[in-house]
Length: 293
Image 1 (cartoon, rainbow, N blue to C red):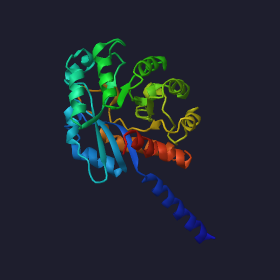
Image 2: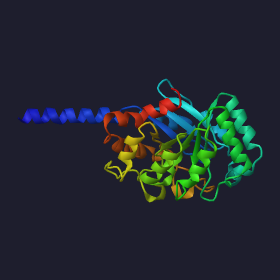
Image 3: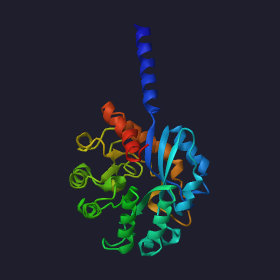
Image 4: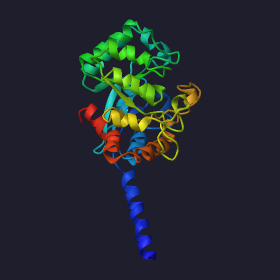
């Protein structure tokens, strides 16, 4: 009996290790100017590879900085063009008349496959009728390039106005909009051109104080039912930004890459509670399908 118990214990360890090594897609990765002094591009790649990330979507400020983060044989990288052309003008990016054509040029190059992350809330976003903002969304639709949009509003109606108006544009809704499951469900019922990602819904950053799950991996109310209703619409992201209260500070380095292992572990805990087929979709398959990999 003692040996049987020991064998079962070893089998359980092996199952756990196998789960932890399943490949994942991270659709919300940053590499930007405020990180370069504490994290090299190779260190960023190493961090993703030791966490079995095989597909990563990367944004950067300035936007060309992401090109320093190189793919490997086991890590596919998809570059997004963030229209924050000048870091010190980030709060007013949408007033830069050069931004739309910069986006067009970037997408036309074939190097960049999407646009974002674009912030349109928290005091750093445009009005709904802003010409530059709307033009960028139109250009993205022309190239069939997904747009990562950060809204963090208190209601899905704000995002609904955007995705309805630009119904030919594919949106990735950053941080699940900062909303709980019922609000996200309302949005998905209105816009079939929106996908949802769970970056910053971890225990460290938890947008709005509402992480998707607790530290043991138990999903918050409503999420499992919603994921089962829309199994092809959800993805995960790490959002390696830290500290969350001093984003793009000029006097401190961004050490988001130094906390990313803990973020990946958090997401793996709740992903491992899902039914296997659903977990595989969120972990990798949905992102691979969205980006035609």
